[in-house]
Length: 315
Picture 1 (cartoon, rainbow, N blue to C red):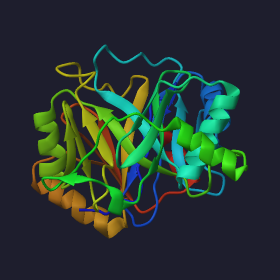
Picture 2: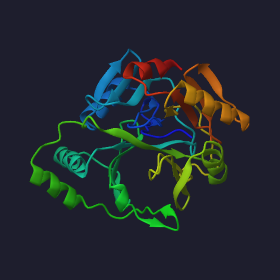
Picture 3: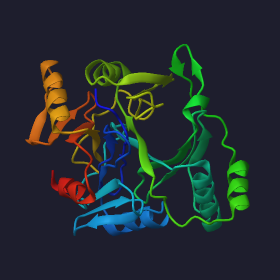
Picture 4: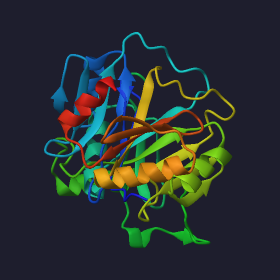
């Protein structure tokens, strides 16, 4: 099983393609179909504080200034909207390095009177939720130290407790340094997908791909590699018994799982094929497969640059 260091996925007006990096050390991003590339790109720059790292006429790759690529937006103006209750992106989750960073971002959102959709203390993390101009879900969060993550019956315990907004804002005010953009160590912390049925989903991600089941909630499963609270969230809240993901529709294009190198990718793909999974190999350093709900996963050999991610826009 590959090691995970980063994850990125979201569903903007362009095609969204987040990635779950498994190479040691950092997180990567994802791809999404979007209708208005310029407008969605501006949102990720001005609201989330990301910078354009690579750009073409039809795609943009964004990440923190000086950081790894996190999000690839692919202009797909004629793509259809996903079917009602279809599988696909629930949200992409951008992980800030510290609680102070989350406080600074929260302070900037309050000052600009930006609308958020929700917030929660998940016990392992503190999170705020919003959506981009085309309705793609986004989580901005910070992790608590691993030694503070509560556990019960051998699994990590998570919750949806009220977020301490007052504490976050007080921390930012006491520091006095304003938010000027996402810090360079910002990563894609995880990707959360809508799925049609948890049974086959657990069998695929845990039984076939080798992720560890870390936590559960009603209608949801959280899996990871390397002991993280979750690299993938999987829930049926919006897609139970619904349509599978249409890869040509707006939103999630694929989630990217980065393995350490080409040898690791070849060995992993061999194991998957031996287990009876259908795997496409468009290039020697890329592999594609789908989960039981039609969500597409891209397996990549090694960390990829912004230019590499831009090259995936036509895949």
